[in-house]
Image (cartoon, one colour):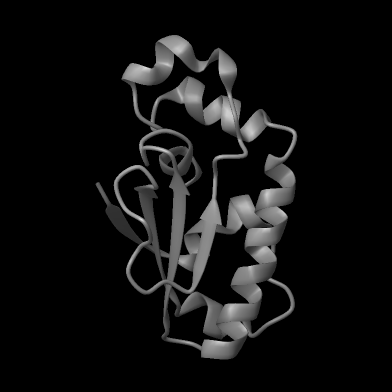
Length: 126
């Protein structure tokens, strides 16, 4: 199962803070496509610019939440409160800065987020 959603990069300003080290105008015109997939079902996505393995965000207490997907408020909250999440956001921001600087304005940047089934952590991070 693969889900691709198109977002304008500027929409994520709250999550990533102020745009810094590159041309703000170029960043505002980038189309950011975020896809999720599960290693269980797909070895690798089609062509992407950035790929992140979300399996290290383990949540052993998620038992009863397995029936939900990553849009469930508690799953989202657990991911955001994970001690490694700020580092993930920082790395994502840095990687996006690098890719946008290389591709320039008007580009489509495809980001793949993956976990075991592609339903919980990767969807919550998207």
